[in-house]
Image 1 (cartoon, rainbow, N blue to C red):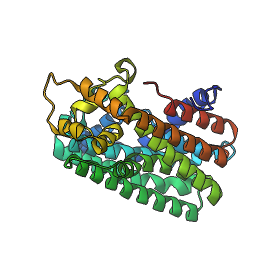
Image 2 (tube, helix red, strand yellow; image 1 turned 60 degrees about the vertical axis):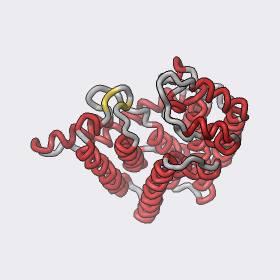
Image 3 (cartoon, helix red, strand yellow; image 1 turned 90 degrees about the horizontal axis):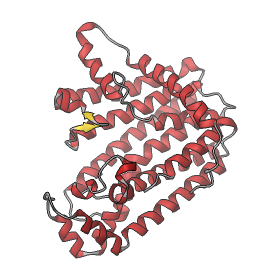
Length: 341
């Protein structure tokens, strides 16, 4: 457990306030359009979970708003346009990921491409990407100085590029028999950690934090993102389905190159050969999981998650987030980094 296990009520109080304002900002950015474009907007609304409430947890924009408030004496509304941009960018990547991964379901319902076809889903993802770049244009109306807004937009664009680099690596790794641990970490740093780092860093930037504190917020988010993904890797093989909501065998069945698998591929020819075989119903994925554990992959992955967690906490404490938002940020960190196997 992290040092934040003692709860206050800050996160429970602030989250509904922040997320209600975020949803309003997202509605403002997306709009509704003329009647003949209704289906176009329906696709975006559907993916964001508005018709039936099956929306994501909005973790990234929440991190942005809390980081900003913790550096600006509790003021957070000025960061809403950027928080909306971050959520829209995240959802752009999900729409395209679902197509590239051939995933028929997300959050228990058909994905955009499954419901409307790949061509329209690609266009919907492009729309989400464009809206993500339109959202920050409202920063000036929120009182953000032009030089700070311009620097934030450059940071945001560089994050967009890193997301696409991470997705390229992820897809390229599928065609390779072996991937090194270093290569895997580079991939998840681009694909997962970069956007979380941007969320915390941009929140601090818009609050006009010092360069030193902004750097610590960036490293906090980067290490948080890496640790979060590596915990997912553990849960994908050894997690309790009653907790995770998915089969513990799913990652191995899909032959995903998660960190424990990459570790095993580097150390055992027998495991490499077994993993190269396509999964067939009835195959014992439990045997693969046991082999990975015997090779030390589980211990290695757990230790790396612990090390990254410690780094995230160190940078957060050095940044010294203040007030109720700072307390809420610590609570959220604890929740994200202490998901049970």
